[in-house]
Length: 305
Image (cartoon, rainbow, N blue to C red; front, side):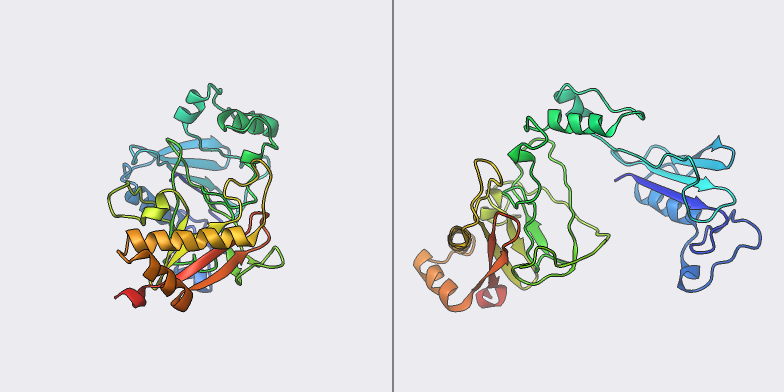
């Protein structure tokens, strides 16, 4: 993952550390934070970079540190703005883009340059995806699909696991729409939306390895330390060929996915599994606001120990 830090030597809010302007102090809880140089050095160390950065003066008051020989796909950089607070200096371009050159090459799309317009970025995205226009149904990010999207299940928080089938070579990962709190159903479209930072661990689970539920190779599936979460969607291909919001469809799919999991992964007779789901599992509405509606089950692990 690329890491870029921007800091000022006269910052009184977050410490710059060694090299800070004389007389600059930081008080309060932030005073215990590591300095900017120490912090970026830690990132460089975690990415196995050469510990000595390449230093370049790129402006009258801007010094650029770049760490080299990092792990593949990782870049670590620090921009120091001398004599300023933690801020972006006037006329300094803050737009940055990381892209996969192989993906652009396979699509026959020219690599972006620093003077690209927003329209050129949009055109490139359309050319790389299977979508033919910006409003193509396959490019709609609102509904949940087999590839993820707005699943909106409140149990998928810290420490949970979310399995997704991967249907494209070189598939990438994107996450958004975090909630500070959300109830089952998310009935008013928005819950307690929040700007959050998350740390995710991505694991590729090969079919037959036993590393993921068998259902997860064809359908989203959740897991917490206490429960398995089979999922059903009313229209799993999103906006393609219209869209259904029928909760009955989502419910049936969640139950079938739960039955498949209990039969094939837990070794339970399907009829017994059906009776168990009715007697002991909980099926609830995930959300009703993303055009494609969702239902998920909560199957307690304690019942199978």
